[in-house]
Image 1 (cartoon, one colour):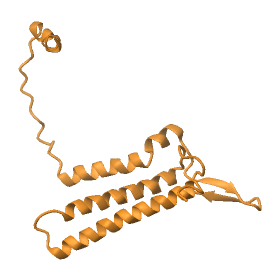
Image 2 (cartoon, rainbow, N blue to C red):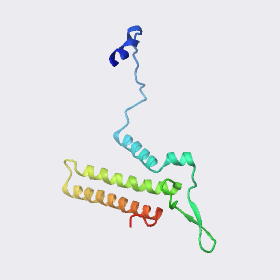
Image 3 (tube, helix red, strand yellow):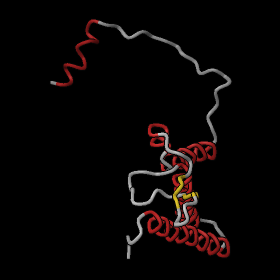
Length: 149
């Protein structure tokens, strides 16, 4: 039934026979360029760029200490759904750092890699993931004191 609905317009219309050529200046991007674009977009999206554009939060916040002096703060405390711009960029850096650790671990599993290089890649990938994980936990305890205890 659905197929008939898709075929119905082509009973009356004729698809033109176009010979479209790709312009000579347009080339296939290298895999590293595509990877860089995807990683940069991952960095922006996990940093909350869409939230920052819509809500327009300040880059850093400020709080008043016990003497009445204003001091800067980087984390919007007690608000899970809110963030300052610097907070989003810092956490996005950590997410990207952890993602690079997983990419390095994946590359260490390739064939034809000498043993020393494989061990170094495995070690660095695992260290990247651990640093990212524990730093994100520290960020969460700074954002929500008393959480994860």
